[in-house]
Image 1 (cartoon, rainbow, N blue to C red):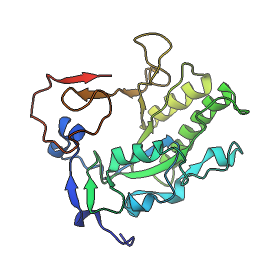
Image 2 (cartoon, rainbow, N blue to C red; image 1 turned 120 degrees about the vertical axis):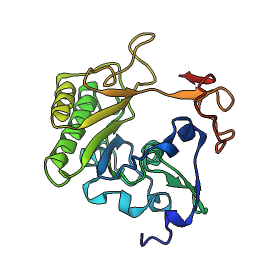
Image 3 (spheres, rainbow, N blue to C red; image 1 turned 30 degrees about the vertical axis):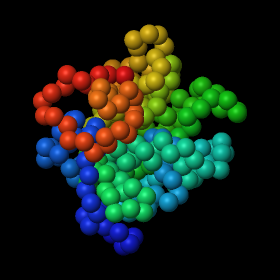
Length: 239
């Protein structure tokens, strides 16, 4: 890869949560797909974790910086959330070690978009929601142009208890363009037992979290590389 390490030369490990969903049994590798991740960015040393060929740097951008909301570039993730989401998709190298943690779609390309994900400090609800819409519309422009040869997924691990016309329209138009919009179910919906926006938009594929009773009450790492039993989901629970 020209960055001093090659994931194929590292020890390959499968985390239990990917074993649970049988990642190792799937023929799909992500080849021919691009995942546009709308999140907090990638950490500055992202090349320590991800192969350079997977990250489409020329199309990645930071709206928070461009709009003057902060001075954080797309490759200066200050929270680690966008970096973690990227690792879920394509896998990651553990620091400077010789270990590669396998992802669910390791051949996928990644476009990282740092978005506005807070209200306050001069940011209104409308401005935040409009920025999510702008990020989706930017992904649409890539699908209609430079990245037209790829299957495209827009991944948004974020949520809020409201939406607006701009966001709803951006999602509908993206789906009409053949783009899959996938979002987290959201940590808090507007009421008990409900999901947040944009997860509860009918055009969206929403994803919740789950655990396994012997391994975690939430997101713990106990037994991270354990071999999970096949076809036994009796201890699996959703969060």
